[in-house]
Image 1 (tube, rainbow, N blue to C red):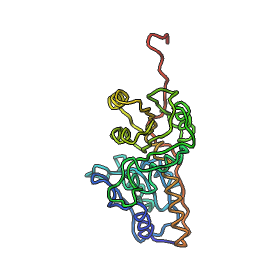
Image 2: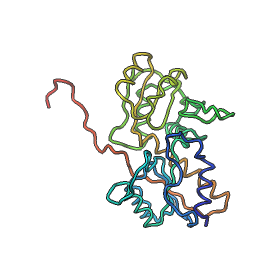
Image 3: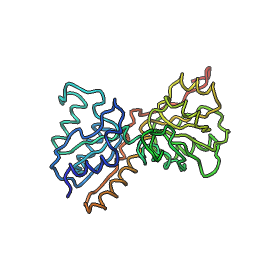
Image 4: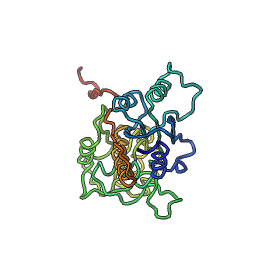
Length: 281
């Protein structure tokens, strides 16, 4: 069985820490480099639900996309939610490793997995990584469907193929507009509107879209916008990442058992459709 340090070295090859944004907090958070690893669980969030799942699974390593402590802390007391996560991990000898923005811009990365889940062919990065001579790494992806689809059809496809959440898929734009090119970006993406417009995409699917940026983007172009839950746009990466680690395990002759969490950690738990103004309750 490999040691944790060997598995982490493999993960760092897939998602080098030096490619993370300067503000990010990636890498190994908890874990003994010399402990053996037999079972690995991938999840989006390092929250108590996924840590408890790792305990039930008897996993030795939990790999998450989101950091545990993005802005630092002064305590890991078990009286705090994140402190309880740390205590549970250490008590059960479970390591925690994070691949965040270094996984976003990887080749393949988070947006490749999102495009794959939506049945889109990746054409190029939306925001290319200037340090990549091959031009394949970067943030977001510009994609094409197999054949043109309407906004309504594409929204229905996203609702069907992405993990179910209370939010579902919100749409801004003409539902009958035809889409030949679609930009996607897993996670919060309304800072990328300029790049999306420059790409010539007919639509942009991402998460965490806000009122004013959407209103301004719609006023400036006919770009259709599709807003999915943050967690749902990043969960497909877990399956892609697990498959990548499986390949590494096979090459090294490791007997790793790799799992993907299907625990829904999106924070929104229910949704009540709105009624038209003036409609009776």
